[in-house]
Length: 439
Image (cartoon, rainbow, N blue to C red; front, top):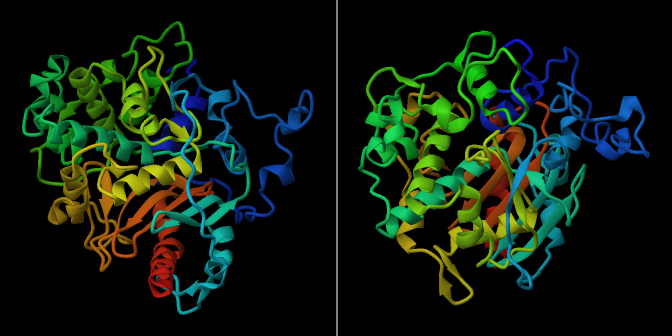
């Protein structure tokens, strides 16, 4: 890959994979307060001085602490496609703010020492947090690079929205999730995806000969990243160009359907299936089925490859409240403002969860007894909670028992959510219990 700009590789990995883009600093990273983009004055000045510049063709704009600025400015670094909200007036979300949430405390996983709610926001480098209870905003917080008019990288929460679109097509009888992928996308017939069912792709139980060993310079992830880069290819590059071309090269290893394996290329394959069935890009379908009918406040956007294909596995950036609207739509099983935007069966299927035995083989220690269904994570806890999740701390957490939706944007130094879950999952449960007691 001589001449390939590694900057996009860093963004791609950080958007997609657990454990990617962990801080390489030997010392403890700067605190949330010390690493605040405003404190560090990234990209300030006209023009910014060299030591405050975050721009192409740098290769480190997604390293910590620069990533705390980058997560709100992706479209300034990479080409994107609009997810339009249309031209109507936004639908206001009602407020019933509850200051008591700031007084909540909980005990982190693996600890005997209680932690306060506000302390946890800083510990997790929270850029924005929204809580809806009974359909009203009860808590709203902004920090770092984000304010109420801004957009933030959703990372792999994008996968869950792609999975949602697929479930909508299934429920409407437009997509057969038992069909082989090759019957829908013949171009994938000779790849590992061709022999998999749509459902196996949706639940990431495909058996793929695909390495994400970042220490290996010959690992498949690097070829995938090079193919997906929207930047000009080097003159000596002769590999696949774009997501769709790369997917055709993936080979099978083992039997589909036996084990869960979190690989972003599944979502990109599903994005191709969705586009082939619907006749729309994932970005345009998100606009038509979600952003416009939900009365969102802001357009969203998605990164694209060199051929304009949206990154279905991690390219979305959006406003905090607008993802809150998506979470509320899930909580209300597709019902919004007197209309049923999609069949209730869509959410019923996602909320039921996937194959726990297959999921357990992946070894997620902070998610014991969990599962994965249609690119949503199911905790199978007492409240029946499930979530969209993305690296560096992104989440749409839906608690049907508490009638609560929680959306968090963050820029935690280490990408893996296993580092964040111990101070996040107990906090979500604590606020859910608090809200139930206040009803």
